[in-house]
Image (tube, rainbow, N blue to C red; front, side, top):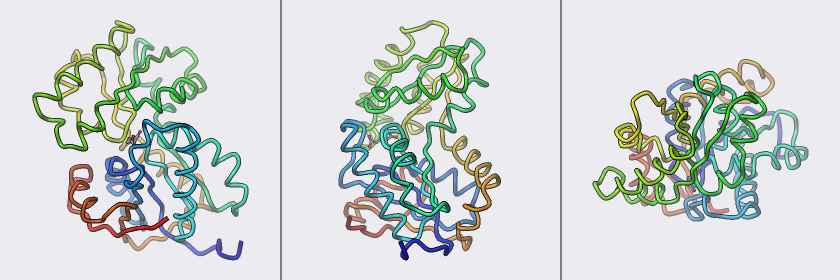
Length: 278
Ligand code: DGL
C-alpha cells in the first residue's frame, strides 16, 4: 500500500471514450484550478452495449490505473460505468485504499435535483441500453423523490450517429424522432427529460426541435460540475489531495491521433492526448 501515499494528485475523469469530455468541459469551466487527467477507454468502447461484469471489470481496471497515476478522486463521467460499476467499486473495492481515495459518478448528482425541475412529477430518461437495463435512474430517483414517476427509453443508435459525426444530418432525424416518440408515448405528462448519456448533449438542438417547447431538457455536465464543487467544499480531506496547478492531460487506450481528431467535437477545443496501456 506504500504506493498510495498522501501526496496530492490530479482529479481523474474517466469515460468509456470521448463522451465524458462533455462533462469534463463543464467541470474545467467551473473548477479550472485543479489538475486533471482525462482517461478514455476508447479501445474497448462502447460500454453501453456490454454486460454488467464486463463494464465493472473494465471500469475498475481504469480506476486503479488512475489511482496509480496519483489521482485520489476519480469521477466516472460515463453514465453506463456509473450505472453498472460505481456501486460495487464504492462498496467493495475502495476498502483496499486509504480514506482519501474516492470514486464518484454522474447519476447521483442528476437524480438529487431532478425532482425540483419537474412540475408534473413525470420524468423521462434517455440513455444507453446498459444504463436503462441497470434501472439506476429509477432506483436513485425513488430515493430522493419517491413521488416522481420515471419513464426510460434506450437510444442505442444515438452514440454511433454522434461518433460518426452524422448527428446533425437529415438521416439522423429518423432515429432521434423514433426514440423521442417512444419515450413520450409512455406518458403524456412528461415535462422533464434527462439526457442520461455523455454523448447526448450533442443532439440537444435536434431533440429541442422535436419535443414540445414546454418540456425541459436536462444535460448533466453543469449539474455534475456544480455537485463536484459542493462535494469538494464538504470534503476537505479529499479536496486537499487534489493538486492545484491547472494542468490538464488527456489519455486514451486507443491511438492518440484518432482520439484527438474526434475529441474536439465533444470538448469544443483541440486536445493532445497520449496512449495509456492497461
Ligand atoms: N459514455 C457512455 C455513457 O454515458 C456512452 C458511450 C458508451 O456506450 O460507451 O453512457
